[in-house]
Image: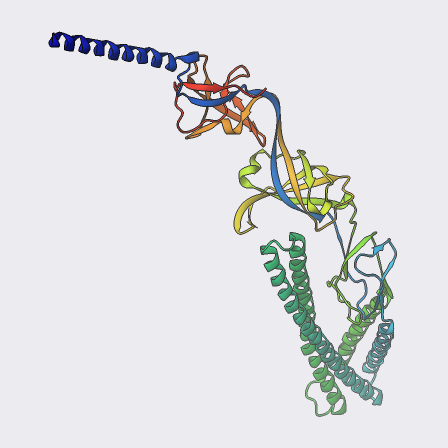
Length: 479
């Protein structure tokens, strides 16, 4: 009886346990297939692709510069008495810029008188040479000696004056080079614009060119000194010959010497007369514009080849934005593309413009703390009443516009390496399907996707845990 009772209890327990197991199996099966989606499936957000117009842009930093500027060179070499304009002044054509010291005219007139006297002396000497030796011939020879010595003294004085100018120029060049080094350092650290560096470089180059001109003048004067000394030697020999004709083994041809003296005196007179005729008491503006820079000071001497000042039209018509585009972004650039212009210098205002020129060569440029190869573009802005030369602006270049194109959020794409990009599609059976796509134009948040259409369902939040064929729980997009 006890054994039978035990058997019955064991069977009852087995029935209960079996029932529980069957119940749990049925229950588990229902949990796994509830709504057709496994209860533990990964939840994913999805959305349909959209059809939009994609505007592709390239951003670049640029500086506002002047297209053209006029460098004023002196018409007269004289001491500057007064500078009538200042930096920032607007001048019209004909306005007086600089007044020169007129005392140079007195010096030139004195030189002219001396040259005419030398010519007359040479003419008298020629007349004396054509007649028998006399006291007149001796006088003419003595005059030639004195004239030759005067010429030597004048040349030595000229060389001394040029040496002073060279010394002053060398000091100016050193100062300009020091400034150039300072500006280069500031430019390398993005403190100043390219325009200021170019101006510093131009200042050094102009002074060096001027020094070269002055040194050439000294060399010419130095070459003339031996000739003058030779003339003095010949004049002295002629004088000795006249005084000691019987003791002189060879008599210098006095007539030929006098003819040479006459020719030299005539050339000197012509040059002095040209200097007098070309002298202008005032330097006047030949163009209208704003004075950008004054390169001389009152009391200095103007010299050929040395600029006095810079004048330019600073209106918007003479402005250009020079921007530097990284070479990786430069492939889509073309002349005529629209540009949106902004920057702290113009506040909330925005201007439009277009690419007017793309420089043919790429070049390395300091961009922050690194050196980057860039392509330089010149941008013409429209209605830029608030821009001025030297401003720094942001140039937003529109490189392409794709209308009515299928796009997906950038965050929904996955890069598989090797240039392959894909998205996950959500199928009707709640499985994922990997779809490789080709990419087109892109904007800030969306990218053109070739290989899908707007009826597809795209997973919005792909992760590394997802795979092709994976079953997921979809979360419908928010309406």
